[in-house]
Amino acid sequence: MIIGVAGGKGGVGKTTVSLNLGWELDGVIVDGDLATTDLPQNRGPGIHDVLAGRVDPVEAVERIGPINILSASYAIEGARASDLQRFSEAVTMLERTYGTVVIDCPAGLAQDIGVFLDSADFAVLVTTPKPAARADAARTRELAIELGTPLSSVAVNQIFAETYLGNSRDELLSEIESELRTEAIPIPYQASVATAQEEGKPIGTLVPDSEGAKQFKTLADRQRTVVKR
Amino acid sequence: MVDITTSTKRQNGVTLVHATVTNTRATTQTVSVRSQVDGPTWLPRHDGIPASEWTDETWTAVLKPGETRGLGFATPAEPTDSPAEIVSVSRSQENERNNEDIISSLEDWSPPNTISTEKQ
Image (cartoon, rainbow over all chains, first blue to last red; front, side):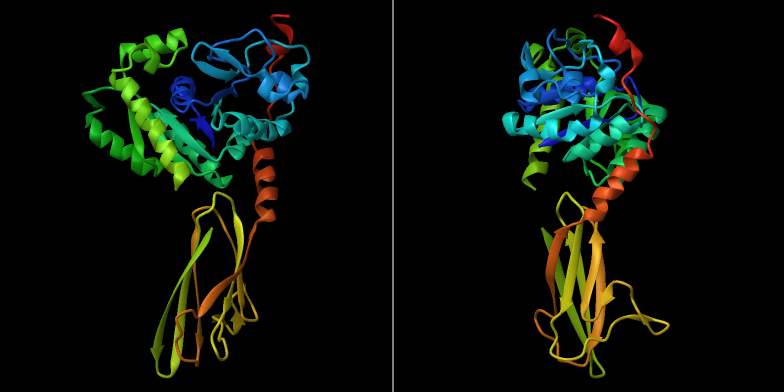
């Protein structure tokens, strides 16, 4: 399965979700954020070389700690030769080897997002409870639907245990579910999630018993049921 | 796959056939459904013109993933268990072109200068 993790707005936690989902599903994470990557970096060839037709995508995957990643970090001469039309074939090749591919999409709604979502079997949206993030997620949802890529879940990141703007957590989640017409899975705001992100490691490897780790596991389980459907 | 469910209602010597077709696949499909009744198929008409999905006794439409569409016709023939059947399903080429159009209508993309100049 090929999952696009997208949300429109920057800083909502797409990379955190991609990293944890990729690890939970034992797949490969593709860094689609060609300009401002947040994922761990390698020193070998990356997605730019794949898109320039210089490297086989499977060979460009690196194991960094517990995760498999096709990174976007390393600067390469002639990155402008990157051809998005090679993307779909590349992720299909990765899927054959790894079974699961998680595409960490960048912010915005430019052509790169369009290509990534078009290449995905389905999309996981990421948002925070903030109205601006939800509005961007809704626009991303519209694009995905237009491209014929169904949504599987929306991960609501940085959610507090108490309330937000006068709503309880449950009220907030059901509001987001009706806005985005997709099942919402809350990812708690926790120090352990932040620490794991800073270290570039899945929270399940650092604090496996935490609420954050449990929620990422729930998110991963949902994707498995989508596949079976 | 693409599913069809049908129902019939007989009144005043006419059988009304209703069908819903659902595309459960992840890609857009072109679906054709054909009347299987033992008698004439009376197509839905607006101002005397048959609905655009119909050609003779075959209804053809493009269904997006997850989309359900309904169709119906009338016939003087008696109701049967299977008054309409799917006769063909194919992945829609129309959708492929549409996606290219959708993507090219988005904001232009190119790798930023910093990637090609830094860290050499």
